[in-house]
Image (cartoon, rainbow, N blue to C red):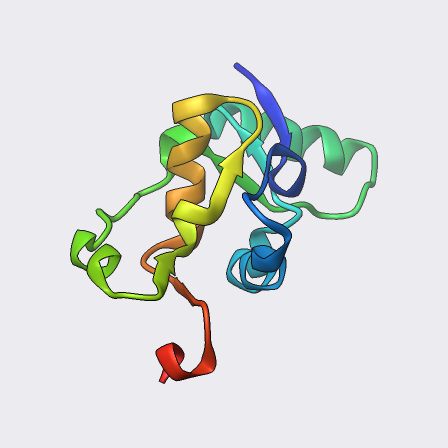
Length: 116
């Protein structure tokens, strides 16, 4: 029963050159709050309603349906999977699942030529 924190505080790009790509891929989940379970998310939502606070987005780890990565994408020269350029600062394997959910098979290219 854990509230881990905001996704943007829990992980970061492995290098600043990937910052824009990671921000773009994370999109609406950038400020989402990562929690251990759907129950924790529901409890947090009830608390926020009671406090009349702004709505928040939650990512309950036990509730996320994570699709397997397309490993063949890692073989493309000059291209990295966004999931591979995100460093998880806390929470280890559990948060890795969240990053995989948010990033999916998104790619980041070193140059425009490779992107094309």
